[in-house]
Image 1 (cartoon, protein in one colour):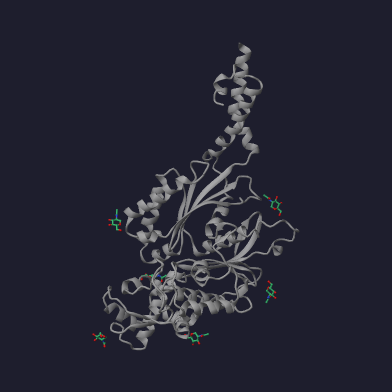
Image 2 (cartoon, rainbow, N blue to C red):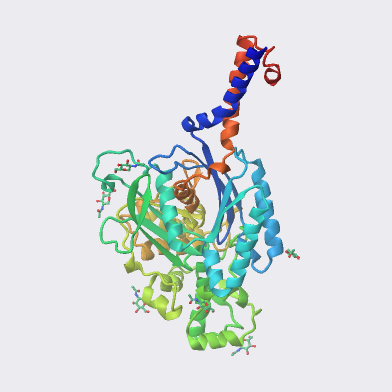
Length: 490
Ligand SMILES: *[C@@H]1O[C@H](CO)[C@@H](O)[C@H](O)[C@H]1NC(C)=O
Ligand SMILES: *[C@@H]1O[C@H](CO)[C@@H](O)[C@H](O)[C@H]1NC(C)=O
Ligand SMILES: *[C@@H]1O[C@H](CO)[C@@H](O)[C@H](O)[C@H]1NC(C)=O
Ligand SMILES: *[C@@H]1O[C@H](CO)[C@@H](O)[C@H](O)[C@H]1NC(C)=O
Ligand SMILES: *[C@@H]1O[C@H](CO)[C@@H](O)[C@H](O)[C@H]1NC(C)=O
Ligand SMILES: *[C@@H]1O[C@H](CO)[C@@H](O)[C@H](O)[C@H]1NC(C)=O
């Protein structure tokens, strides 16, 4: 009798001890959710990596994603509906095949919130508080809820692109360092801002260093606020009004020429489907603030609800003229005084550049382009979208503006030309994973030490192998009698 008792005790002792021994040899699965609180959308992504890091960094993989068309900034001053929105988003994550129970959620807000912070900082604080409270009351842990700086967003995007395209971690080829690693640049255009990042080899005094996979990269990140597609559309509309004002037109009585719109297009697409026409919807923030005193006096004199009338008719030359100040630094400074892209301050290396977000949705998709194309084809297709009758489920009246603006930014703004246009790759996904700053962010988070108490994954992972072992013993050695309670679990 005593012998059996000792065997049982030893066995149970082993059972409860083994998970800790096991953990020394078995990598854990680490998971984190990253919520992208963008200017024009909100998305939640589940990332997973093994605790067996590669030179100190996790090889992060996207497991699940939820994409919603609604940005959190649309709930400014409406915490009640924001709470419901965030609760619904977190509820939708219950179908995810996540293995651990208390996964941290990291929330990064981008340009939309940065721009809102300039005009209504109290709304921004409230939005962040509501988000944090909803996460606290959910089954998830609060990781971090913050506004990302433009340069961080840009660095993370660069990292995402290079991890997804498998440029890094590079197979160690020699010992001479990073020179041998060919990385790609990242072009990210959201709704609010434009981010550019590339590996800078020399003459980069403003470059940031990025330490991943035990390698140091020198990355030049730059961010242009107001250059996201939605803010740019606001600036474009403001410019058509301003330029008509300068010509002395009667703006309340006559139609204003909209030269970047296809008159044949129908209104289909919901997001950015149409240009704003109401004064208070156009002149909403600093992006559309025109410093000309005569114009701003006139603007103050007209009612907020005044509706401008536009006449859509594509004119390639005039369209380019209205857009001109956006890529001409001195003209932009004269009109807006701030947030101006300086093309001569950006000298892009002769690398492959991945263009995503609006470079995909507002350029490649409406133009129906291949992943990579040449300058002449792009120009030809732009004319088609702007002139020919367009009718499709995702076509909209603003397509012509969108493709013209993105092309202007790529060529006059970022200096892609006939020889280098082919280095651009317009993508939404690379190897099945969404391209955005979020994967790079999770990669940086993977370098942080694990909170050991957090991971329940371990127990469930270890329990099953041991259950199987017990069952095998039960069957092979006919131990049903002694381990009756355990064997009955089989
Ligand atoms: C990082 O690289 C250095 C040499 O470049 C090496 O000595 C060190 O062990 C590496 N660390 C890790 C965690 O791989
Ligand atoms: C949510 O928004 C709707 C309008 O879309 C409004 O009628 C309602 O009062 C809002 N709810 C809360 C709790 O603020
Ligand atoms: C502009 O046109 C409107 C409507 O035609 C007219 O009522 C108004 O007097 C005009 N304003 C000027 C300054 O001409
Ligand atoms: C944005 O506008 C607000 C108010 O219009 C102003 O106080 C603020 O200084 C502006 N921000 C910048 C960066 O100029
Ligand atoms: C930029 O705009 C200025 C006016 O502000 C103009 O004089 C100049 O010619 C423009 N530059 C180019 C390259 O068009
Ligand atoms: C840019 O790179 C391509 C190869 O990708 C090469 O053919 C071309 O000569 C390079 N151009 C310059 C200016 O270095």
